[in-house]
Length: 87
Image 1 (cartoon, one colour):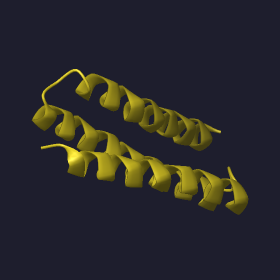
Image 2 (tube, helix red, strand yellow):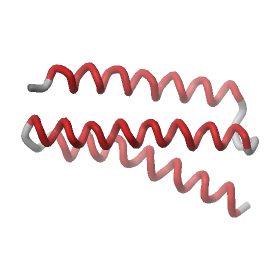
Image 3 (spheres, one colour):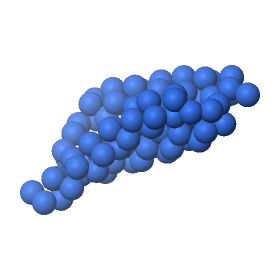
């Protein structure tokens, strides 16, 4: 359906944005890198929201949602910890 296609497109956009911002920021100053990490984190929270929407629309099941949320949360914790170590 059109709604399913939009959900997939939005989830893909978020999931591509996360590593892309980390990679782009890694070639910048620490201050700028931190900004790119903020953008990546924002995309990870957006992806989490897209997955909740997918669950409510029965595109994924609770098990898959939990697996993906765990991976997103792990990324967020590691990224925030790394970001706190920047000057």
